[in-house]
Amino acid sequence: MRVATVLLTTFLAACSGGAPETKEIVIGQYGSLTGGAATFGLSTKNGIEIATEEQNAAGGIAGVPIRMVLEDDASKPEEAATTVSKLLSRDRPVAILGEVASSSSLAAAPLAQAAGVPMISPSSTSPKVTQVGDYIFRVCFIDPFQGTAAAQFAYNTKGVRTVAVLTDVKSDYSVGLAQYFKETFVSLGGTIIAEEAYSANDIDFKAQLTNIVSKNPDAIFVPGYYTETGLIARDARGGGYKGILLGGDGWDSEQLVGIGQDAIIGGFYTNHYSVDDPSPVVQDFIKKYQAKYGTKPDGLAALGYDSAKILYQSMTEVAKNPAHAAAFADRSAVPATEGARKAARAALRDELARVKNFPGVTGTITIDKDRNAEKPAVVVEVTKDGPRFVESISPGGSTAPAPTGTEGAAPADGAAAPAVAPAEAAAPPVEAVPAAAK
Image (cartoon, rainbow, N blue to C red; front, side, top):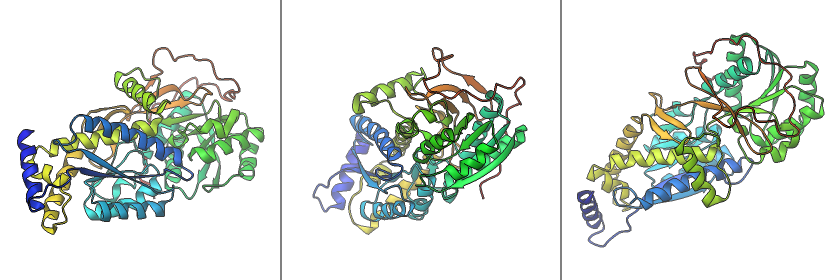
C-alpha cells in the first residue's frame, strides 16, 4: 500500500510539472432523482452513498478518496443518454453506476461501451442491457429468471391456472418480463386468457380491466412500475376483481401502498431481497441505512449498495498495480495519460468479470460470462406494514420458505383473499431459461 501511494504521488507531481494536484478518484452515477420513477433513483443513490462513505473511511482506493458525481436523468431514457455523455466528457470517470430502468440503461450503455468505461447497473433486469458490450455489467438477476420465478410462484405456490397480463408496451422492462412470465406459465400448464396494454403515465385503466375482469382470471400479472401498478390495482378492485395481483421488482417502492391503498394489499411480487432476512449482512445494512435515512431500505437501495461495494472491491484489487492506481486518480489533461487510463479501465473490466460468491445484501453474487448476476429471487407480499417475505427461488428452481418468525403472519387488514387454493400437486420447477427478448 505504501509503495503504491508513493508512486502515485510521484506520478501526479510529474504530470503537473511539480505542483501537487488534487488526488481523487471520480465515479459517475446517473439515475431517476425526479420524474415518475424517482423513488428508484433516490433509493439507489442512498445505497451507493453508504458504500462510498464506507470505502472512503477505509482509505478510499490505494489511499485516494472517491468522489461521486451524480446526475439526474428525470426518469427519461433520452435524458439518461445526455447525462452519461456529460459525465464522460466533463468528468472522465473511472466507472459509472446506473441506471435502474432498463430503457434508460439501454440508452446510455452504448456511450459507456464506446468510451471503454465500465458501467454497472444496480437493477436493470432486461437481458438486452449487458448485451450492449463487454464493459456493461449488472448486479441484479435478469428478467428471464424473474419471469420464471414469478410464474413458478403463481402456478406452484398459489395454485393459479389462468392469468391475464397487463403490460406497459413502451417499457423494455415490462415487455420482456411479461414475455418470460407467459412462456414459463404456459410451459407449466397454465393458460393466458387475456392480454391488455397500457403506457407509462396512463392514469385510467378501466377499459383494459373491464375486459380482463369479464374473463375472471385466477390472477392478473402486472409487470410494471409502482406508479401505474397502484392505480391498476384500484381500478381492478373497483371493477369487482377478487383474484390475485402479481408483479415484478418494479413494484418495489414505499409509495406503492400510498398509491394503491387497500386495493394493492395482498398482492405479490418478485424482488431482490427482504428485510425479514436474518442474515447478518442484511441486518447490518438495514441498521446502517435506518441510522442515516430514518427508514428501512428497499431492494433498490440494497442493489445500489451491492453495486458500489463490488465496484470498489474490484478497483482495490486492480489498484495493487501502481500504474493502474495512478491512472485511477489522474485528473490531468495531458493527452499522453489517456492510454494509461484506458489500460486501468480495461483491467477493471476484467476484474469485474471475475467476481464470484460476493456476499451481498441481495444475496451471494457471481458475475457470469454474460456479465449478469447469478443469484436467487424472493417473493414478497404487500402489506400495510411493508413487504412480507413469502419464499425465495433459486436459479435452479428450488424454493425456500420464509425465515423463522415470519411464517403464518396474519394478512393485513383489507387484504384481498386469494381466489385460488394452492394446487394439490405442484408442477416441477422450470430450470430452462426462456428465449431472449426480441
